[in-house]
Amino acid sequence: MRSQVSVLSDFCTSMVFRVSGTLVLCLLMVPAVVAEVDPAELGWQPVSTSNLRIKGLTVMPAEWVDAIWLPADTKVLRIEVTEDAVIVNLSLGALGGLDEAKLTGLYNEFRNLFYDLPQGGNVRLMCKGQLLSSYIEPAPAVEPISEKVESTAAPQTYSLLSTSLGGKKICIGPSHGRLWNGTAWGWQRGDDCGFGEAVLEDTNSIRLMQFLQQYLAQDGATVYVPRQMDETVCCHPGENRYWWQIASYSWLYHMGYPCSVWASNTGSCTSDTGPNRYNDDIR
Image 1 (tube, rainbow, N blue to C red):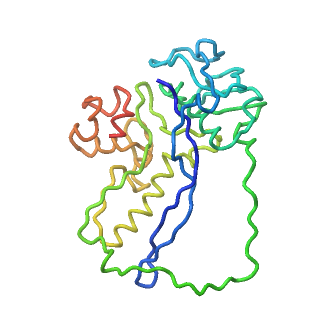
Image 2: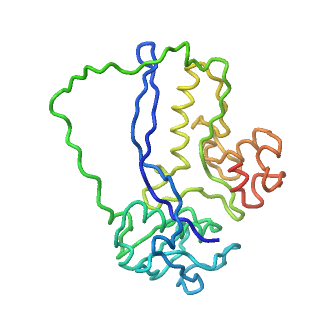
């Protein structure tokens, strides 16, 4: 199967806040992944994985792909698998036209290659001894507005009676969390910038959903969440981590839900380990 490279763009979204008894709509622009592009269309070329120089890889992953896609001017100099990371050293060609979209595409190629390894969730792309992300031009500084700007435009408001969620049942899903990948427990999303667990999507999705849960509940909805939202509840018996860090499928298993709910892909129902649980967690 040919890889797909993400192309970043902007999209318009909205958030609704309660202000003095009314709901106020706020429109904003945020960056998002909106398309998947065939890497061949971007001038990327397949590179055989049999020619990669990999240090520290003692056992080949069960599903090893034959090739990865890289920009034509980018070469893999060497790869080192350490105790907790996969370090990929790339040639200077990786710096040409480097932006967030290119960095994401490169990261996904190597993350998919090493996904079956416990270290696969922590892929670090390097060039000349530095993280590849450090070469991206930083965002320009934004100067604060020195004068208060008065606006005569009234905010667009909506009646609480017409937007109340009273009586509604809503399920929200904080994504990812630690799961069993077939050989060990690991994060589902990587730390390609080397900032640590605090910036992982696996952990931040909980924090975002905590706010959303409160907003929905305050407007009258009954909210269901398949992951543990309380960060004080300890701990998973095998992983010895707080429950909020663990993926949905495992939490649902330990809460006593039927196997058809938390293991609908593998059908392996005796524990939350065993086979790779990635697809179980997606479902």
